[in-house]
Structure formats: C-alpha cells, structure tokens
Length: 197
Length: 197
DNA sequence: CGGATGATGTCAGTTACTGACATCACTCTA
DNA sequence: TAGAGTGATGTCAGTAACTGACATCATCCG
Image 1 (tube, chains in turn cyan, orange, green, purple):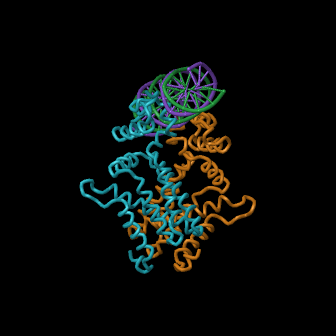
Image 2: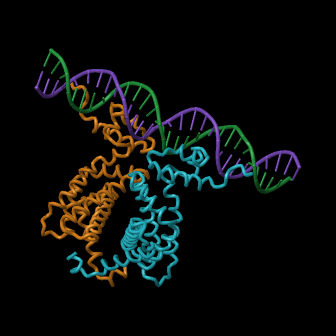
C-alpha cells in the first residue's frame, strides 16, 4: 500500500470547491478543506499558493492553449481569425457548464476573488499581445486586438453560464462565433450608422 | 488641548506611504504604521479597510470628478469630447508628479497592489459606462468608449510618471490630449492604412 | 451641570500563511 | 540486498492581518 493516497492535489481541489459552494468562500477555512481531503493545512499550501488560487488552478493550461493556437494559426490567416482560433482552443479547456456556473457564482460573490480574476485576465492579455506581436502586428494594434478578443470571450462566456439550465442552449464555441460576429459588425459598420446607435 | 490630534487619517496615510516607500509594502506592518502616526493598530483599521486601501484613498474623489465632468459636459458635445473632459477633471485630482511616481513604484512592486488597482479601474469603467449611457449612448458603444477612455488615461499617466525627472516634461493634461489624438488617429484611419502598421 | 457622542485605546481571538525539521514508503545504486 | 537518497507529507511554532466587545474621556448640547 502506498504511503500516501495519490491524488492529494485533486482531492484538495474538490474539497475546496465543494466547501466554497456550500458555505461560501469567506466562511470556509483552509483547515476545513484540508480535513475534508484527509490532509493537513500545511499540505494545502504546498499545492496552492493561497486560498484563492484553488479557483484559478487551470489558468496556466488555459493561457497556454490560447497562446499556442494563436501562434500556430497559418501565417496567412487574418489576425482576428488567429485570435478566434485561440479563443476556441481556450474554450475547449473549460470542463462543464455546471461547474463553470458554480465557479462563477463563487467568484462574483467575493471581491477578493474578482481581484484575482482580473489579474489573471491581465496576464492573459499580456501573453496574447506578445503572441500577436510575434505574428508581426504593430504595437497599439496587438494590444487592442488582444483586449477585444478577451472581451469577446467574456461576453460569450457570460451568455453561456447565464443561460437557463433547462433550455438546451448553444455551446460555448458557437457563442464565441456569435460574439465575434458582433464585434466584426460594430467595427466594420460605417461611422454614420454607429453614431446613431 | 484637544483629546486627540486632529488629523489621524492624514497622519496614518503619510506614515504608511513613507514606510511603504522606504521598506516596501510587504516588509511594513500595520503596527509600525500606527506607531509612527502615534496611534494604535486598531485605529488604522477604523480609517482604512485594509493595508492596501491606503494607497487608493483618493479613488472615490477621483471617480466622482470624472463622472461629474462627463455628466456635466454640454449635451451637444460628442461622446469622446465628454470623456476627454472627464479625464482632465480626474487628472486635476492627482497631487504631484513625484508622489505619483513613488506611489506607482510601490504598486508595480507588489502583485496584491496590482490586483487592487485593477479592481479600482474596473469600478471606474463601470461608472463611466453608466454615465455615458445616461448621455444616450447605446450598450456596446458606452462600454467600449469607457474602456478606450481609460486606456488613454493609462497611457498618458504612464508617460507622465516614466518621464525623466530632470527634463521639464509636458504636464498630464497635455499628455492626455496627445494620447487622445493618437486614439482618434487609429480609429479614424482607413483600414488599408491600419493593416499596414 | 450632567448626560450623550464619538474617536480612540485595550484586549482577546481567529485565521491565512511561512519556515524548520521530522518521518517514512519507495527507489536507486553499490 | 543493505543502505543511502528522494520526495510528499506531518508537526510545530511563529508572524501578522483583521475583527468584535468593551472601556475611556474630552467635547458638546440641552
């Protein structure tokens, strides 16, 4: 028999997520999380930098998927199409809608968690900007496109999680395409029409 | 003689700022701040919600100045001009360049402080979006303009603080105008020119 | 003159997080 | 195959952010 059960990190993650969902983030102590996972508090902090980081565990993978897809898009592809590929690749990293919904509910209920989410998005934006620069984009264009792309993702993601659970809704990739089409519409639209909005 | 020295909050603010600048944010304890201000730790937390909030003390005033100026711009003014007025009014709230520089140095050295700054900007963005909606702007337009306006502010502010201290540089309002002009240029530019950047 | 007020002090407690060291199944090597 | 490493975990003590409850006492107001 192994000295330790093998999946400490996964068990900690599941325990934390469940407790945050049940009692709320603030009312959950790290000691309780560790205890439910059959481990100690000290071990929790060996796997996660802090109490918040549990909810952002997949973020490196997420960022990596996005960046790789953008970098790997054909050189002939338009910048916005490369970004679209990145968004879809990132979306594929997200597990299931119900989990995403629960996670989002935990985050919006707590300002500290919103702060953490904001800095994760900022890091994503930086990485995406650099990747677009590597594709030959100029300085303001790369940053603007990165920000716009992430805005598209956020809009699509919010629609996906806000959708009524009972209705069988469109999936995330489809919503990303929709949102992207809206962005194209707004940007392409001539200025007289835009001013009338 | 008064029972308490009158400016507790100001003294705490000055003490905290000085210590953060000298030793860094992490290496400063609230007990030290309170002690330098001639007060107790408990009193610190009566004036500031947490250790970070000291560095964002003016943010409500800042936001108020910006929102008021945008709301008070003549109804005939173009949305972007109303935003420009807001940015200048907000800039007027900023004390001096040397203080701003020191503050920025403290913040960029610490991720927790960057998180806090991000959420302050998010709040600013929400307020600005709502104000623009009140002026009759549509839904995606208001948000986009708010974000673009704040981006302009950030660019101008960074230039202002990064400028060599010895050279007598342009002031913040002038840099805001410059940055705004660049935004107008990028947005107005026809798409063939933009693609070549 | 006396009670209400409000900013501060005091104190005890909780909890996130850290560093140092011990443990012990497993593995690799001589 | 013995014995030295390795690595994930446990144990323990400590620091510091933050909170709640209650005391104090100059000032203000009736």
